[in-house]
Image (tube, rainbow, N blue to C red; front, side, top):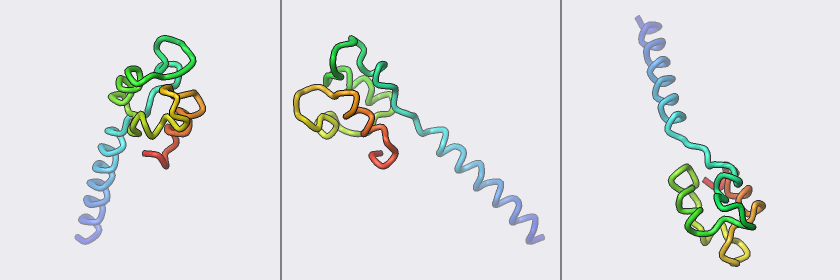
Amino acid sequence: MKLVKLVVLTGLLGLMSFSVMADEVEAPDYAVMNANGDDGVDAAEYDKGKNAGVKVSFADADKDGNGKISESEYEVIKEPECE
């Protein structure tokens, strides 16, 4: 009987972890974020991307403060530690 409970609980935990992983959305690639193809992602483009999985604020991502996020700045925010 204990074995049956263990198997059922293990299965339930597996299902719960799957649903949590399924909710996680990966941020789009830089080229997708940079919709107009200029030399950086501006605030409007970034806001659209935030709805697609980006979790860092524009101000925090724009490390050099130039009003645009470069490809190197964007790649840093996509790293798992930043989420």
